[in-house]
Length: 397
Image 1: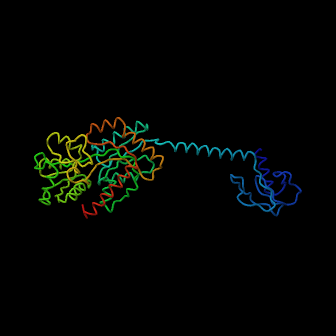
Image 2 (image 1 turned 135 degrees about the horizontal axis):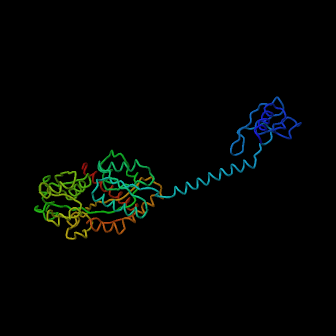
Image 3 (image 1 turned 60 degrees about the horizontal axis):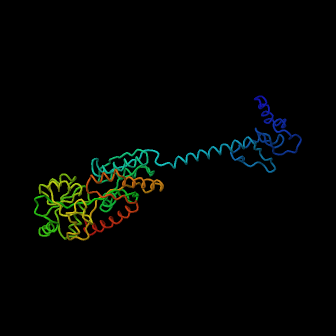
């Protein structure tokens, strides 16, 4: 229809004359509501000027016309238009949903809450490389040390719960800090364990020229001279609690000397300004081989295969004692379950890969675990209760 004809129809509708111009076939009938594309006509002049009701996509007018009014017309062209629009929206939603199901579609980030160059950092990088090869996506390792792992934990909990941010877990972040810090700014239940990577024993060591040849001789000296035999700890509360558990079970009192890092503590043990310390077995073995320190006992349930000559603390008279240092991975607990499952599978596969097995064999005393997230969660629950009981009995650490 031309522009002139359209304007003519509109003018006819506006004036109320010649209704047949826009609503053909209506002349001479009794006054009733009729419709056209421009305006509603409610009969002759008294009803002129009633506004046309706008149409909604469903084809229903937004307001009711009078009783007896003719139903609005829905043309085949309109039906085709709305049908094609709905189909387009459905297709777009389907494409969007398909894209949303692809995980991961961008780089993963693993937060390491300790400094670069540490054993935990190196192990994480080996695992990250294996995950990147398996999932064919980049894996970025970010060191966020400080505040006894608190900074790293907060970085995870401040990130979206979309599975793209993973945290390296340690006993400090998941067990010790929640037990000893009543004002801890996070709930460990907000973190979902994915897998335990490794666990390692510690060794109770003294200087090579120290007068102690076994654990019993050290404990005898501590019992004879309460508070005089010194024992070092480093790296937060973990080894300090290990020392307190040792003296608690043996019924002795040590002089506790805290250090920020193991290197200075080891030097002081070698120089005999400190009598003893607990240290990672992997770090102790080279010094034992060099004759700089002596190991009185290891803290595992069984002797370590790389140091079978060193007895356990349990064998040495304290049958309930054990201490392991472990690392694992976790994500925010509110991460979608399908992404948790995908990450757990990829991480466990990486831990059991040839590359990681070769790495742990070279590094020394670490023991590969690679268990499920459920198994790591159960370990955390057991250790938390054990240390909570110890702290309650001690009253302070």
